[in-house]
Image (cartoon, rainbow, N blue to C red; front, side, top):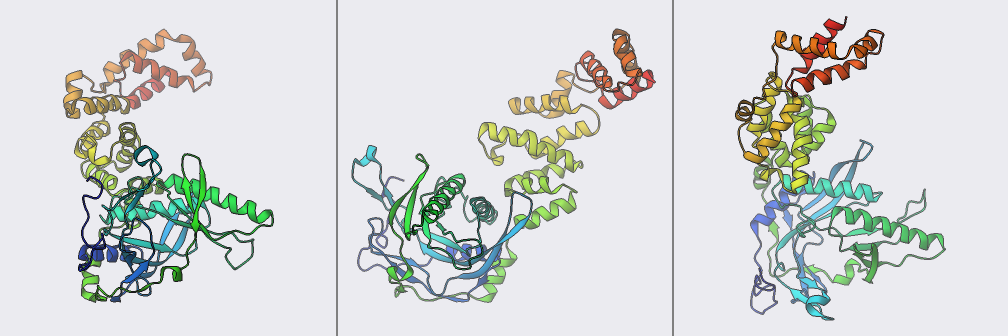
Length: 448
């Protein structure tokens, strides 16, 4: 909506109004806690976090402090070398969002504008243990969190639109030291790649300070993606700077074990379990299973396709190849992909039963994208069926061998690579419609 069109008396800090806890937000927090192996507190409390900033009219933010709703969890992330690493989660707590400050000279000149539309909207904050050792691990951790929030239908995990946000603490220490160095906090990272870039910048900045004998100052930095630098925003606060105290306008939150178990029983199959099942049930390589279960919607598309085509690996190859290529080219999500999974399966069944070749299948696929027609209809209309009649192919093979006597001699003298050339000539003569397996067989018979 328009700026400040979605506000209410509570977020505006008007007197005489009380906040109300959102039950769905509590349920989402419990879902995320269970998915990240956390302990769920049956008793938790809200607190006021005080700070003064234009985007917070009432001067405090409703949050949780000593007694968060979830604690002591972990997620496993996959690193670039194929290994797994466990990242501990200290806590997941509920809090309200603040407003948004807009520093845009084109709109406001030197002034800062405030939009309170998102103020008061419930969010969950996930605080990780200091287990992340590189920008690449931070990236993998965020990708895993995005995967979980989308699988759980909590949000779309879009960093560019602010539905998933990340602030990162960075500190360096010498090899072998146990104590962490002074930490800085980096904010304003609005994409997964920007998190990686910003952390690389800040690690290098701190490294240079320490190598020159200086001391890192505890402060908050804002990442400037255009300039590729992080700039100091303010000194970094400690918890006591916020003067937390219990929120008097909200009762402590009591959650029954029955409700926790009900939510647990309704959790969807999570990415790691789905990946393991894909490997076992569909005999897929780990690479395929990882990519296909990267998003819940892509995994669903794959499963709907293999329900109609039993060649699981062929379907996987096409989803990872042709389907994802089109998604990237058109910048669309799988839910907007024009070919239904059943139609893709129908196309691939034509390959499996040798009605068409893989090469012709790609031509049919493009036609399906353009016209929405069924694959069998396209094959029949354009006469694309594969030639699997041995007697018809035998004549074409003989003609090709007669046309290329020198290549025939080369093959017979031991240069087996020439066979590929001869197969190509037969395919050319049949406009790609010959059954390649049968062509290979006939050529070898006649050349032996």
